[in-house]
Image 1: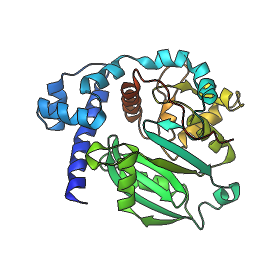
Image 2: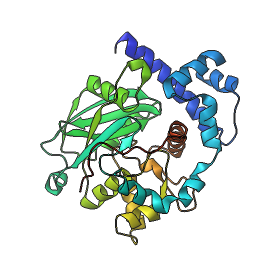
Image 3: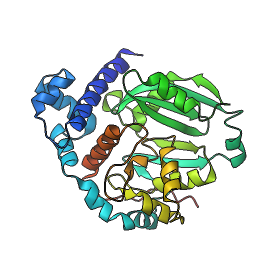
Length: 298
């Protein structure tokens, strides 16, 4: 890791620690000095670092968390997916400044459990913990998060999804992807097209494609997701497919809530789900949805 990358890793570890502290103390609003102290920084330094990284201030992030927007958004969820589809927010969809495209592996290749597929993998710090990226020549097939000491278990979980694949360490490529996905300012990474390779059953892929249609800052219920894919009676199966999403964040399973408005589960931890949602809401507050430049995948 270069000196520049090492500096960025330290910075994002400090910011991630601060976000964890905010989430742990939700819905309270701890003062800036208290949060900065947890990150090991002075209040002024922490304020500058956080704002430079996130594009929002710590106060704005706390406001997004404390506003409890999930319930209000959920009341609109019957129209969120339909509206997104009408304006072209489908398969290739907007995620901040990233343009996401995807394709699915054939059913036969999926049944082969990755046999004949080479998957590069590597870890790099992200705003939401260490990030594991798995990528084939056709696109990213896995993205996962880990806290301190969780990396071996998380890697084993991801590798077990395609046990017959050949796994090759590609740390430099993973670092570039993480910098690109999260637009890490200190890395100088520029947003670009992010290709995804969906490896799952036909039903899982249908659910994951529907998830790509949910705009940042919006949430829907499991019931609405089931209705949207034409399987209103398959709420439990939709929830299971949502939980098996291998490409977290990019395929936004974190934007699905229980019908009551409760957060529900999240494979990488409910606290992380809450932090990601608050981060997205703060970044998208006051912004109008943009129509992607590519056409919908049929």
